[in-house]
Image (cartoon, rainbow, N blue to C red; front, side):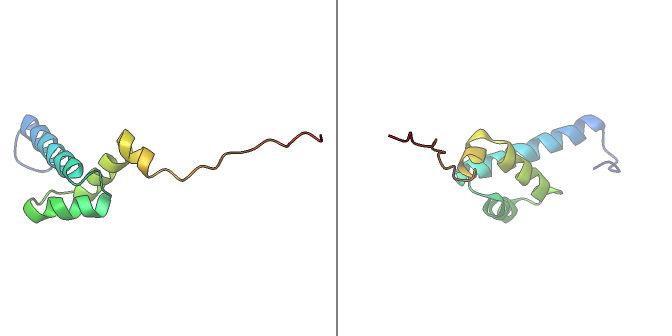
Length: 82
């Protein structure tokens, strides 16, 4: 996109539209992972640099980070002697 012979405003618009497309397929897939969102996006659209954009979408969303977090275990304190 840096070497494209179009105006800078059009370049940013294309980037914004591609982010909206990725966001749509990520939400439509039920906040699934990177590979499935890539698959859904590539069925209809060819976006340059899509994998890094999808990774960014999956890793920055609150719901996705919460779902993919490791399972935590509660730490218990030592019991008293009696």
